[in-house]
Amino acid sequence: MNFYYGLSETRVVVLGPPGSGKGTCAGFISKMYSIPVIRTGDMLRKVATEETERGRITKKHLDRGELVLDEIVIGIVSKRVRMPDCEEGFVLDGFPRNLVQAEALNRIQEDLGMGLSHVLNIVTDAETIISRLSLRRTCPRCGAVYHLKNNPTKMDEICDECGTKLILRSDDREEIIRHRFEVYEEKSRPLLEWYAKAGLVREMRGDLDINEIPEVLRQVLEGK
Ligand code: AP5
Image (cartoon, rainbow, N blue to C red):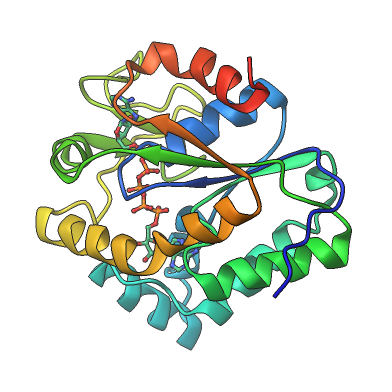
């Protein structure tokens, strides 16, 4: 399949293993460029609470650290990127996750006449990830991501953005984290080659101090 380039605003795909900092970087990019973040993990955790067949299937995959079915994820993303707030750009955190999804995104781009501007690849190792995820806390309401030591909230485990009590995700147990890492290696890593062929990949270290991230992101995305 040919890669669709089209017009590029700031349309970023963030790739990297679980816990590498995709959500954190996507949040910074969203603020820096005033564009929405599309977080498939958050959207799917919401679907998993539905009392429907789709909800039950999604919950089963999430709890095991497996990828949720392509048709469910592609349907959700396809609808979301067509919303008016995405016209000026967006950042995709957690999509695509395999080549079927990358091809689906390519078709959506072609359909909407919009190209990706960057694919940001965050590079980290498994041990950093495991120590990080056990101390991660997320906001179940707005999706903001914190870390008890490296990126704490101002008030004890209360979201700075919306005041909601933070939670520990059910898939942040060590054996599930290790399995998510294996799934990444098998299904998601091949995406790097696909996007590298299109010349879109920019690499970034995942072990930077959190305060350094916005400036490094600016350099990586704007080539400065
Ligand atoms: P998802 O919610 O996307 O999880 P993930 O990819 O496993 O990634 P994480 O959210 O765990 O980590 P992250 O890379 O965003 O890191 P974060 O910024 O939080 O997906 C969950 C599940 O949903 C999947 O397993 C799958 O089942 C399903 N799913 C999602 N998308 C799908 C798709 N397209 N197709 C099919 N299924 C799909 O950072 C981690 C922690 O480290 C935080 O506490 C943070 O504060 C801290 N931190 C970050 N950067 C730094 C730093 N530089 N220094 C110190 N601490 C840092």
